Length: 336
Image 1: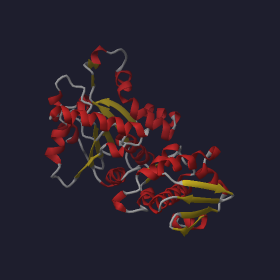
Image 2: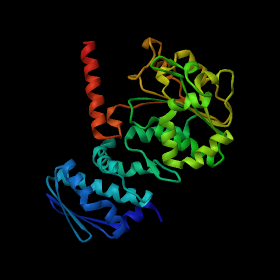
Image 3: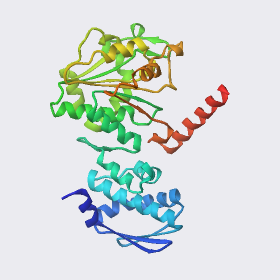
Image 4: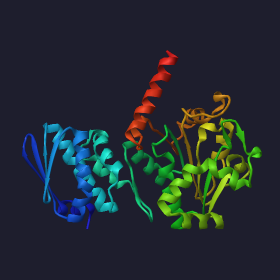
C-alpha cells in the first residue's frame, strides 16, 4: 500500500468555510502522536500559525484567517504522514511542519519532502528543508559532494546515515571519517593518547550522529573491525580510496592543497563528501582556508555537486537560526 493511500485512509480534511477547516484522524495511535501529551503539539501549532485549534474525540478543528488555517491543515497532514513513515513525531517536526511550508511555493512540498527519507535501525531521518532534500539526493547519486553552511543545517548528520547504510548493505567496504587536525591552534602531537584518542574529540559531532542513529554497540564493533575508520586528513595522503564512503568534516580548517589532496584520493566505487562552515574558521590565518576557494574552482564540474546551506536550513532550536542571522548581519555591517 502506498504512503499516499495510507494517508488518505487515516485522515479526512474538510473545509467548513473561509475561516474553518476540520480534520479527522481515524487512527487513535496517530491521533495521540499528532496531538501530543497534554495537547502540547496543537498548542505549539497554534502559536506558530496564529490560529485557534479545537480538539475533541478524533476531530481537530482549525479557525483563523484562510491562509493560516490552510497552513495549519497542511502541517497536520505532514505530521500524520511523518508518523506513518517513521512511527514517531519529534518536537522539531512541529516547527518544521510550519517553517518549511513554502518549498518551491508548493503547499504540499513539506509532505513530499518525506520522499527523501533515510531509514536507520533507531530512527528515520527526513529532509527538513529544500536544500536538505537536494543534499540527500546528491549524497545518493553523486560521487563527490561539497556542502557549505552554518552549524545545524544537517551537513554531517545527513551524510552519516547514508554512509553507514551503504556499509550495512555491503555496497561499500569501509566508511572513513576525517577532518583537519587543527582546532584553535592545537596540534595532534601535543595531545595525549594514540591516534584514535587524539582525533576522536574532534569528530564528536559525527560520533553523536552515529550513536543516535545506529547505537553505540553496532558502531563500536564496526570501528574495531576497521569497517569504520577514524583518521586525520593528513593520513589520507598517498592513499587511493576504493569501495568506501569518506567524509571530510570541518573542511573550513583545511587548506586548498589539503582539500585537493583529499578529493584526488577517490577510487573505484567510492563517494567523497566535504563539509564545512566558512564562518567558523579556526586557522590562525583565516585566509589559508581552502573551502570556499575549492568551491569556486570546482563549481563548473558537473560531476561534483555543491550544496550551499544558509540560516533558513538550520534545524536545531529555532533560536539558533536567529543567532546565526544576527552574527551574519553584524559581519556585513562591519564590512560596510
